[in-house]
Image (cartoon, rainbow, N blue to C red; front, top):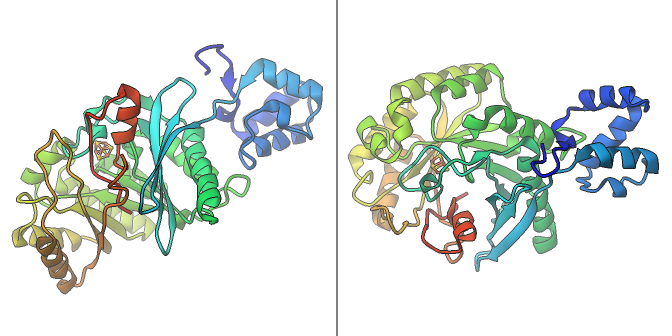
Length: 362
Ligand code: SF4
Protein backbone atom coordinates (compact mmCIF):
# COMPACT_ATOMS: atom_id res chain seq x y z
CA UNK A 1 0.00 0.00 0.00
CA UNK A 2 1.08 3.55 -0.62
CA UNK A 3 1.40 5.03 2.86
CA UNK A 4 0.53 8.51 1.62
CA UNK A 5 -2.72 7.91 -0.24
CA UNK A 6 -3.48 4.28 0.70
CA UNK A 7 -3.76 3.20 -2.93
CA UNK A 8 -2.70 -0.36 -3.69
CA UNK A 9 0.55 -0.80 -5.56
CA UNK A 10 -0.72 -2.35 -8.78
CA UNK A 11 2.42 -4.46 -9.10
CA UNK A 12 1.53 -6.31 -5.90
CA UNK A 13 -1.20 -8.03 -7.95
CA UNK A 14 -0.57 -11.19 -9.97
CA UNK A 15 -1.72 -11.32 -13.56
CA UNK A 16 -4.62 -13.56 -12.52
CA UNK A 17 -5.68 -11.14 -9.79
CA UNK A 18 -5.49 -8.24 -12.23
CA UNK A 19 -7.56 -10.16 -14.79
CA UNK A 20 -10.25 -10.91 -12.22
CA UNK A 21 -10.28 -7.32 -11.11
CA UNK A 22 -10.64 -6.07 -14.68
CA UNK A 23 -13.60 -8.38 -15.23
CA UNK A 24 -15.31 -7.01 -12.10
CA UNK A 25 -14.60 -3.51 -13.41
CA UNK A 26 -16.41 -4.43 -16.64
CA UNK A 27 -13.19 -4.50 -18.67
CA UNK A 28 -11.99 -7.25 -21.01
CA UNK A 29 -9.50 -9.57 -19.34
CA UNK A 30 -6.95 -9.17 -22.19
CA UNK A 31 -6.62 -5.52 -21.14
CA UNK A 32 -5.17 -6.78 -17.85
CA UNK A 33 -2.47 -8.60 -19.81
CA UNK A 34 -1.65 -5.40 -21.69
CA UNK A 35 -1.38 -3.43 -18.48
CA UNK A 36 0.70 -6.20 -16.90
CA UNK A 37 3.13 -6.01 -19.83
CA UNK A 38 3.45 -2.26 -19.43
CA UNK A 39 4.18 -2.72 -15.75
CA UNK A 40 6.73 -5.52 -15.95
CA UNK A 41 8.09 -6.03 -19.44
CA UNK A 42 8.25 -2.34 -20.30
CA UNK A 43 8.78 -1.05 -16.73
CA UNK A 44 6.32 1.75 -17.37
CA UNK A 45 5.79 3.81 -14.24
CA UNK A 46 2.98 6.09 -15.40
CA UNK A 47 -0.54 5.01 -16.34
CA UNK A 48 -0.62 7.96 -18.76
CA UNK A 49 2.14 6.37 -20.85
CA UNK A 50 0.18 3.14 -21.46
CA UNK A 51 -0.65 4.16 -25.00
CA UNK A 52 -2.79 1.19 -26.07
CA UNK A 53 -5.07 1.54 -23.02
CA UNK A 54 -8.13 3.78 -23.28
CA UNK A 55 -8.12 7.14 -21.53
CA UNK A 56 -11.08 6.06 -19.37
CA UNK A 57 -9.37 2.92 -18.15
CA UNK A 58 -6.14 4.79 -17.48
CA UNK A 59 -8.11 7.27 -15.38
CA UNK A 60 -9.76 4.43 -13.45
CA UNK A 61 -6.38 2.83 -12.77
CA UNK A 62 -4.95 6.16 -11.69
CA UNK A 63 -7.83 6.62 -9.28
CA UNK A 64 -7.46 3.21 -7.64
CA UNK A 65 -3.79 2.25 -7.88
CA UNK A 66 -0.29 3.54 -7.56
CA UNK A 67 3.01 2.32 -9.02
CA UNK A 68 5.67 2.37 -6.31
CA UNK A 69 8.73 2.46 -8.52
CA UNK A 70 12.37 2.70 -7.40
CA UNK A 71 14.56 5.65 -8.44
CA UNK A 72 18.31 6.15 -8.54
CA UNK A 73 19.20 8.61 -5.80
CA UNK A 74 22.94 8.85 -6.30
CA UNK A 75 25.64 7.06 -8.31
CA UNK A 76 29.34 6.81 -7.60
CA UNK A 77 31.74 5.81 -10.37
CA UNK A 78 34.91 3.90 -9.54
CA UNK A 79 38.13 4.02 -11.54
CA UNK A 80 37.66 0.26 -12.09
CA UNK A 81 34.24 1.03 -13.72
CA UNK A 82 32.18 -0.27 -10.82
CA UNK A 83 29.12 1.93 -10.26
CA UNK A 84 27.55 2.07 -6.85
CA UNK A 85 24.01 3.40 -6.67
CA UNK A 86 21.80 4.37 -3.82
CA UNK A 87 18.14 3.87 -4.65
CA UNK A 88 15.22 5.67 -3.07
CA UNK A 89 12.00 3.78 -2.38
CA UNK A 90 8.42 5.11 -2.31
CA UNK A 91 8.63 5.55 1.48
CA UNK A 92 11.97 7.37 1.26
CA UNK A 93 14.00 4.41 2.50
CA UNK A 94 17.43 4.09 0.92
CA UNK A 95 18.92 0.87 -0.38
CA UNK A 96 21.79 0.20 -2.70
CA UNK A 97 22.77 -1.73 -5.77
CA UNK A 98 26.03 -2.05 -7.64
CA UNK A 99 26.93 -2.53 -11.29
CA UNK A 100 30.14 -4.53 -11.59
CA UNK A 101 31.70 -4.81 -15.04
CA UNK A 102 34.45 -7.36 -15.67
CA UNK A 103 35.93 -8.60 -18.93
CA UNK A 104 33.58 -11.59 -18.97
CA UNK A 105 30.40 -10.32 -17.39
CA UNK A 106 28.22 -7.41 -16.39
CA UNK A 107 26.89 -8.13 -12.93
CA UNK A 108 24.17 -6.42 -10.91
CA UNK A 109 24.39 -6.75 -7.14
CA UNK A 110 20.97 -6.06 -5.60
CA UNK A 111 19.49 -5.65 -2.12
CA UNK A 112 16.67 -7.73 -0.68
CA UNK A 113 15.91 -5.82 2.54
CA UNK A 114 16.24 -2.29 3.89
CA UNK A 115 19.04 -2.91 6.41
CA UNK A 116 19.60 -6.35 7.88
CA UNK A 117 18.90 -8.13 11.16
CA UNK A 118 21.86 -10.51 11.08
CA UNK A 119 24.65 -8.32 12.54
CA UNK A 120 27.62 -9.92 10.78
CA UNK A 121 30.57 -8.22 12.38
CA UNK A 122 32.47 -7.39 9.18
CA UNK A 123 29.58 -5.81 7.24
CA UNK A 124 28.32 -2.21 7.31
CA UNK A 125 24.72 -3.31 6.74
CA UNK A 126 25.07 -5.52 9.83
CA UNK A 127 25.36 -2.33 11.86
CA UNK A 128 22.02 -1.00 10.58
CA UNK A 129 18.62 -2.13 11.81
CA UNK A 130 16.43 -4.07 9.46
CA UNK A 131 13.73 -1.56 8.52
CA UNK A 132 11.62 -3.71 6.24
CA UNK A 133 11.62 -6.33 3.51
CA UNK A 134 11.74 -5.22 -0.10
CA UNK A 135 8.73 -6.01 -2.25
CA UNK A 136 9.30 -8.15 -5.36
CA UNK A 137 8.92 -5.10 -7.63
CA UNK A 138 11.52 -3.20 -5.60
CA UNK A 139 14.06 -5.95 -6.18
CA UNK A 140 13.03 -6.18 -9.82
CA UNK A 141 13.36 -2.41 -10.35
CA UNK A 142 16.96 -2.48 -9.11
CA UNK A 143 17.75 -5.01 -11.83
CA UNK A 144 15.96 -2.94 -14.48
CA UNK A 145 17.78 0.26 -13.45
CA UNK A 146 21.17 -1.47 -13.37
CA UNK A 147 20.48 -3.03 -16.77
CA UNK A 148 19.66 0.42 -18.17
CA UNK A 149 22.79 1.83 -16.56
CA UNK A 150 24.88 -0.99 -18.00
CA UNK A 151 23.57 -0.31 -21.51
CA UNK A 152 23.99 3.46 -21.18
CA UNK A 153 27.46 3.43 -19.67
CA UNK A 154 29.04 0.35 -21.21
CA UNK A 155 26.83 -0.55 -24.18
CA UNK A 156 26.04 -4.00 -22.82
CA UNK A 157 23.07 -5.54 -21.02
CA UNK A 158 23.43 -7.30 -17.68
CA UNK A 159 24.69 -10.85 -17.86
CA UNK A 160 24.44 -11.81 -14.18
CA UNK A 161 22.52 -10.87 -11.05
CA UNK A 162 23.65 -11.53 -7.50
CA UNK A 163 21.50 -11.08 -4.41
CA UNK A 164 24.44 -9.94 -2.30
CA UNK A 165 23.48 -6.38 -1.43
CA UNK A 166 21.76 -5.24 1.73
CA UNK A 167 19.76 -7.85 3.62
CA UNK A 168 19.39 -11.60 3.91
CA UNK A 169 17.37 -12.82 0.91
CA UNK A 170 16.24 -16.02 2.62
CA UNK A 171 14.59 -13.96 5.37
CA UNK A 172 12.52 -12.29 2.66
CA UNK A 173 11.89 -15.61 0.97
CA UNK A 174 8.52 -15.15 -0.74
CA UNK A 175 9.39 -11.74 -2.18
CA UNK A 176 12.84 -12.90 -3.28
CA UNK A 177 11.23 -15.86 -5.08
CA UNK A 178 8.61 -13.63 -6.73
CA UNK A 179 11.34 -11.24 -7.91
CA UNK A 180 13.25 -14.15 -9.48
CA UNK A 181 10.05 -15.32 -11.12
CA UNK A 182 9.58 -11.85 -12.69
CA UNK A 183 13.24 -11.54 -13.72
CA UNK A 184 13.14 -14.92 -15.47
CA UNK A 185 9.58 -14.66 -16.88
CA UNK A 186 9.03 -14.17 -20.60
CA UNK A 187 6.79 -11.22 -19.78
CA UNK A 188 9.45 -9.92 -17.40
CA UNK A 189 13.17 -9.60 -18.13
CA UNK A 190 13.41 -13.11 -19.61
CA UNK A 191 16.81 -13.82 -18.05
CA UNK A 192 18.01 -17.37 -17.44
CA UNK A 193 17.81 -18.51 -13.81
CA UNK A 194 21.38 -19.80 -14.13
CA UNK A 195 22.50 -16.16 -14.40
CA UNK A 196 21.15 -15.45 -10.91
CA UNK A 197 22.93 -16.19 -7.62
CA UNK A 198 21.23 -15.83 -4.26
CA UNK A 199 23.68 -15.46 -1.41
CA UNK A 200 22.80 -16.36 2.17
CA UNK A 201 24.49 -16.01 5.54
CA UNK A 202 23.09 -19.47 6.26
CA UNK A 203 19.48 -20.11 7.30
CA UNK A 204 19.30 -23.93 7.33
CA UNK A 205 15.51 -24.20 7.24
CA UNK A 206 15.22 -21.89 4.24
CA UNK A 207 18.04 -23.63 2.37
CA UNK A 208 15.97 -26.80 2.63
CA UNK A 209 12.97 -24.86 1.35
CA UNK A 210 14.99 -23.84 -1.72
CA UNK A 211 15.51 -27.57 -2.27
CA UNK A 212 11.80 -28.30 -1.86
CA UNK A 213 11.04 -25.51 -4.33
CA UNK A 214 13.61 -27.03 -6.69
CA UNK A 215 15.04 -23.65 -7.62
CA UNK A 216 17.08 -23.28 -10.80
CA UNK A 217 19.19 -20.29 -9.71
CA UNK A 218 22.56 -20.61 -7.97
CA UNK A 219 23.05 -20.62 -4.24
CA UNK A 220 26.05 -19.12 -2.46
CA UNK A 221 26.78 -19.43 1.25
CA UNK A 222 28.79 -16.70 2.99
CA UNK A 223 30.86 -19.11 5.03
CA UNK A 224 34.01 -17.23 6.16
CA UNK A 225 34.89 -19.91 8.74
CA UNK A 226 34.36 -23.67 8.74
CA UNK A 227 34.64 -23.84 12.49
CA UNK A 228 31.63 -23.05 14.71
CA UNK A 229 33.58 -21.21 17.36
CA UNK A 230 35.10 -18.81 14.84
CA UNK A 231 31.96 -18.45 12.78
CA UNK A 232 29.90 -17.61 15.89
CA UNK A 233 32.25 -14.72 16.54
CA UNK A 234 31.73 -13.04 13.19
CA UNK A 235 28.25 -14.27 12.20
CA UNK A 236 25.89 -14.61 15.18
CA UNK A 237 23.35 -16.40 12.93
CA UNK A 238 25.67 -19.41 13.19
CA UNK A 239 24.60 -19.96 16.81
CA UNK A 240 21.18 -21.21 15.64
CA UNK A 241 22.41 -22.48 12.27
CA UNK A 242 25.54 -24.44 13.07
CA UNK A 243 27.88 -25.79 10.42
CA UNK A 244 26.43 -29.25 11.00
CA UNK A 245 22.89 -27.94 10.41
CA UNK A 246 24.05 -26.01 7.34
CA UNK A 247 25.87 -29.02 5.88
CA UNK A 248 22.77 -31.15 6.37
CA UNK A 249 20.53 -28.49 4.78
CA UNK A 250 22.93 -28.05 1.84
CA UNK A 251 23.05 -31.80 1.22
CA UNK A 252 19.25 -31.84 1.23
CA UNK A 253 19.24 -28.89 -1.19
CA UNK A 254 21.79 -30.55 -3.46
CA UNK A 255 19.94 -33.86 -3.52
CA UNK A 256 16.79 -32.07 -4.62
CA UNK A 257 18.25 -29.59 -7.12
CA UNK A 258 21.62 -31.09 -8.18
CA UNK A 259 22.93 -27.51 -8.09
CA UNK A 260 26.49 -27.21 -6.75
CA UNK A 261 26.93 -24.54 -4.08
CA UNK A 262 29.45 -21.69 -3.91
CA UNK A 263 31.12 -20.90 -0.60
CA UNK A 264 32.27 -17.34 -0.09
CA UNK A 265 35.23 -16.96 2.19
CA UNK A 266 36.91 -13.73 3.27
CA UNK A 267 40.40 -14.46 4.54
CA UNK A 268 40.82 -12.16 7.56
CA UNK A 269 44.29 -11.39 8.87
CA UNK A 270 45.08 -13.45 11.99
CA UNK A 271 41.56 -14.81 12.21
CA UNK A 272 40.93 -17.48 9.61
CA UNK A 273 44.04 -17.38 7.41
CA UNK A 274 46.05 -20.37 8.66
CA UNK A 275 46.51 -23.81 7.12
CA UNK A 276 44.26 -25.24 9.84
CA UNK A 277 41.45 -22.95 8.61
CA UNK A 278 42.00 -24.06 5.01
CA UNK A 279 41.93 -27.70 6.16
CA UNK A 280 38.61 -27.14 7.96
CA UNK A 281 37.19 -25.46 4.87
CA UNK A 282 38.37 -28.32 2.63
CA UNK A 283 36.68 -30.78 4.99
CA UNK A 284 33.44 -28.80 4.85
CA UNK A 285 33.66 -28.79 1.06
CA UNK A 286 33.54 -32.59 1.00
CA UNK A 287 29.86 -32.61 1.91
CA UNK A 288 28.69 -31.87 -1.65
CA UNK A 289 29.88 -30.57 -5.05
CA UNK A 290 30.92 -26.96 -4.58
CA UNK A 291 33.41 -24.25 -5.39
CA UNK A 292 35.05 -21.61 -3.24
CA UNK A 293 35.30 -17.89 -3.91
CA UNK A 294 37.99 -16.30 -1.80
CA UNK A 295 37.03 -12.67 -1.33
CA UNK A 296 39.31 -9.76 -0.66
CA UNK A 297 38.21 -7.70 2.34
CA UNK A 298 37.99 -3.93 2.59
CA UNK A 299 38.27 -3.12 6.31
CA UNK A 300 35.61 -1.16 8.18
CA UNK A 301 36.61 1.49 10.69
CA UNK A 302 34.94 0.20 13.85
CA UNK A 303 35.53 -3.55 13.53
CA UNK A 304 38.83 -5.18 14.18
CA UNK A 305 39.29 -7.08 10.91
CA UNK A 306 41.83 -6.56 8.16
CA UNK A 307 42.50 -8.37 4.94
CA UNK A 308 45.00 -11.25 5.07
CA UNK A 309 48.28 -10.71 3.26
CA UNK A 310 48.62 -11.64 -0.41
CA UNK A 311 50.95 -14.55 0.41
CA UNK A 312 48.50 -15.98 2.96
CA UNK A 313 45.62 -15.72 0.50
CA UNK A 314 47.60 -17.43 -2.25
CA UNK A 315 48.75 -20.19 0.11
CA UNK A 316 45.16 -20.67 1.26
CA UNK A 317 43.86 -20.89 -2.30
CA UNK A 318 46.71 -23.23 -3.33
CA UNK A 319 45.92 -25.61 -0.51
CA UNK A 320 42.27 -25.79 -1.54
CA UNK A 321 43.19 -26.34 -5.20
CA UNK A 322 45.56 -29.14 -4.24
CA UNK A 323 42.60 -30.76 -2.49
CA UNK A 324 40.78 -30.71 -5.84
CA UNK A 325 38.44 -27.85 -4.88
CA UNK A 326 37.63 -25.27 -7.58
CA UNK A 327 38.86 -22.03 -6.01
CA UNK A 328 38.73 -18.46 -7.35
CA UNK A 329 40.31 -15.45 -5.72
CA UNK A 330 38.04 -12.45 -6.22
CA UNK A 331 39.54 -8.99 -5.98
CA UNK A 332 37.62 -6.25 -4.27
CA UNK A 333 35.88 -3.79 -6.64
CA UNK A 334 35.11 -0.13 -6.24
CA UNK A 335 37.53 0.44 -3.38
CA UNK A 336 37.75 4.15 -4.23
CA UNK A 337 33.99 4.65 -3.80
CA UNK A 338 31.50 3.55 -1.14
CA UNK A 339 31.09 0.23 -2.98
CA UNK A 340 30.56 -1.87 0.08
CA UNK A 341 27.42 -3.56 1.34
CA UNK A 342 25.57 -0.94 3.38
CA UNK A 343 28.17 1.77 3.14
CA UNK A 344 26.60 4.11 0.62
CA UNK A 345 23.08 3.72 1.99
CA UNK A 346 24.24 4.53 5.49
CA UNK A 347 26.17 7.54 4.25
CA UNK A 348 23.21 8.76 2.20
CA UNK A 349 20.82 8.31 5.07
CA UNK A 350 22.96 9.85 7.75
CA UNK A 351 24.85 12.27 5.57
CA UNK A 352 28.08 11.04 7.13
CA UNK A 353 30.83 8.57 6.40
CA UNK A 354 30.73 6.84 9.73
CA UNK A 355 30.26 3.33 8.42
CA UNK A 356 32.49 1.54 5.98
CA UNK A 357 32.40 -2.05 4.98
CA UNK A 358 33.70 -4.68 2.64
CA UNK A 359 33.89 -3.62 -0.97
CA UNK A 360 31.83 -5.63 -3.41
CA UNK A 361 33.47 -8.71 -4.82
CA UNK A 362 31.99 -10.60 -7.69
S1 SF4 B 1 26.74 -9.86 5.40
FE1 SF4 B 1 24.67 -10.02 4.57
S2 SF4 B 1 23.55 -11.16 6.16
FE2 SF4 B 1 25.42 -10.38 7.15
S3 SF4 B 1 24.80 -8.41 8.04
FE3 SF4 B 1 25.64 -7.98 5.98
S4 SF4 B 1 23.83 -7.93 4.67
FE4 SF4 B 1 23.22 -8.98 6.56
